[in-house]
Amino acid sequence: MERKFSCKFVCLVLLMIGIFANAAFSKDMKIGSCIYRFNDAFMLRFRTAMTIEALKNSDESVTEIEIADSQNDQVIQNKQVDDFIAEKVDALIINPVNRMESMAIIEKAKAANIPVVFINREPTREMLDSYDKAWYVGARAEESGIQSGQIMAEYFQANPDADKNHDGKIQFIMLKGENGHQDMILRSKYSVEAIHAMGFEPVELASAIANWDKLQAMNIMNGFVMSIGPENIEAVISNNDEMALGAVEALKLVDYNSGDPEQFIPIVGVDANAAALEALINGEIIGTVLNDADNQGIAAVKIAMAAASGKPVNKDTIGYDVMDGKYVWIPYRKVTRSERNY
Ligand code: GAL
Ligand code: CA
Image 1 (cartoon, rainbow, N blue to C red):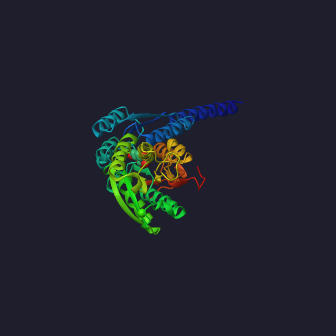
Image 2 (image 1 turned 135 degrees about the vertical axis):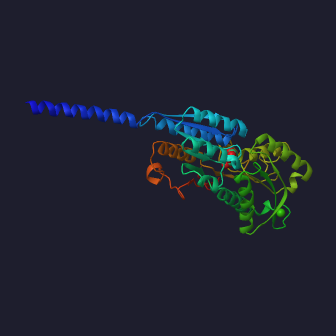
Image 3 (image 1 turned 30 degrees about the horizontal axis):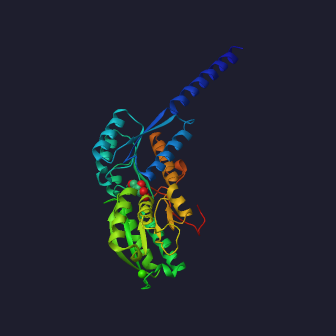
C-alpha cells in the first residue's frame, strides 16, 4: 500500500515537472523585423507572408512578429534595431536600407547574441561570415535577369514584326531599380545577355534608375517616348513590375499598349505582383518573373524561430535547403500568357 502510494506521488511529481519543463521550452517568442520601406509593392507581399507564417506557428510557441517601416533611411533602421535589441527580441529579420551597411546591424546582433536573418537585400559573404547566427534569404538576381531576357527574346521569335525596323536587333529601353541593389545590377546585365544568347542583338536606346517606383518610371518613360518616339522603341525591359506598369501608363498616353496591335511595345517586368498579372491578362505587358515572396517570407521566419530556440538551421529544421550554412535561395519562375502558369 505504502509503496503504491509513493509511486503515484512520484508519478504526479514527474508529470508536473514535465508540464513545467514543456511550458518553459515553448516560451513566447518575439521576432523584430525592419523593412527598408513599407511603400513597396513587393515588400508588402513579403510582410504579409512573414505575418501569416508567424501566426501559423503560434500554437507551438507563441510567435509574435513586429514589423517596422525603416522609411528608406538607414539611420532610422539602425535605431529600430537598437530598440528591438533593448526589448530583448528573440530574433531579427532585416531588409536593409543599404545592404552595404549591414555590418553595423550584424555587430549589434552579435553583441546581444540575437540571431539575424537578412532578406531581399544581400549583405556580402564576408559580413555574413563574421557572425555564426547571421543568414540570408533571397532569390538569385541573375536568374530573374535571364528569365526576363528569355521572355523578351521568345516574344521576338514568335513575332518577327516586333523587330520594327527589321535590322535583326532589338532596340530597347531599360528601367533600372535602385543604385547598388544586387537585383538592379544583375537583372540589367543578365536580361541583355540572355537576349544575346538567344540570337538577337540587343541595342540599348536609353536607360534610367526609377527606384522600383511606378510614378518615377512613368515620368522617365514619358521623357523617352517624347525624345525617341514610340515607333522607334522595340522593347522595354524593367527590373520590376511597378516600373513596367509605369511604362505602360506612359505608353497609354500616346495610345500605345491600349489594344491596337500596330501600336504595341513589348514590356517585361519582375515580381508577378497582382497588378502586373492583371496587366498581363489585359495584354499590356508580355510577361513577368515570379519573385516568390511567400516562400522567402516563410523561410525567413522559420530560420528566425529555429535559431531563436537554439536549433541548428538546416533542411530538417526549416524545410528549405541551406547553402553553405548561410543562404536560402528561392527559385524564380517565368510568367507569361503562353506558359499559362499563373
Ligand atoms: C526586388 C523587387 C523590387 C523591390 C526590391 C526592394 O527584389 O523585385 O520590386 O521590391 O526588391 O528591395
Ligand atoms: Ca530592330
